[in-house]
Image (cartoon, rainbow, N blue to C red; front, side):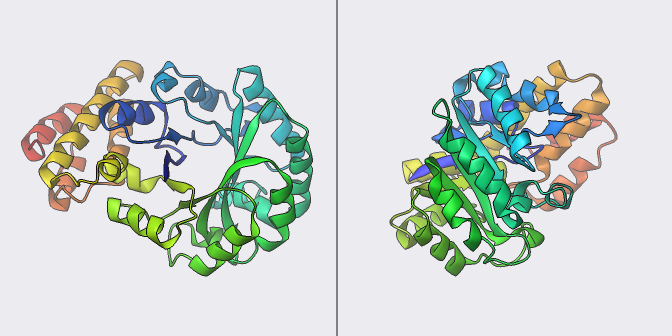
Length: 308
């Protein structure tokens, strides 16, 4: 089973990926949050993350999101010019601002766009490509017209989140449609979605013995030891997981303090670390922590409330 860190906008950036790998390890690789065209050029902020020196200990694969073949070509060219030889295609972003513009999962409703991109991928021998996708936008069976285009590309793998975009991260996973899609594709398949414990990975491995691997986003944020625990076959105690979780937190806090301008920015950024809290921290303690007045108050409460 290959174990990959999924791209999650605003969360799995270079600092998180770097320190997760340094403290926990266990991942076979990671994918960057998507690069998009912004003001007629590839987003400079995202390019800085993709080119960050913090990527040296895990060598992530950059992901791109596009609405047409022209945007695809522009983004791929920018990455190739920077020496990247592997690119992931985002066909799964569920957020309405992107979907309404035909990007992310929006491409699933535009087979002609994917066919044009597939033509360019087949002609590009300099780069390897992979895909991350949903099952559809409004329905879990909208992937079906895309199979020919997907199969025509020499893809490293296809990662599937078995929901449709309108549901975002809510509701049941459509396992039957996932199985049908996997059977229709000629590529190695990764499963993505609702993976939070080592047992979840083990269950998927047992259920789908043909599965190439898993890709985890929210689960690795709330349990950054997840892959290491699965690899070792031993789950850490709640106290040990909390201790390591705080070690990751403190490394990020120190990094943000050195890189961001002003305590307000540092405080705003570090609070997002708790958007996906571990189950080993008391929710009442976390609520009090997030009510801190400023970064100094936050640090004082952090020591008082959550240090094991």
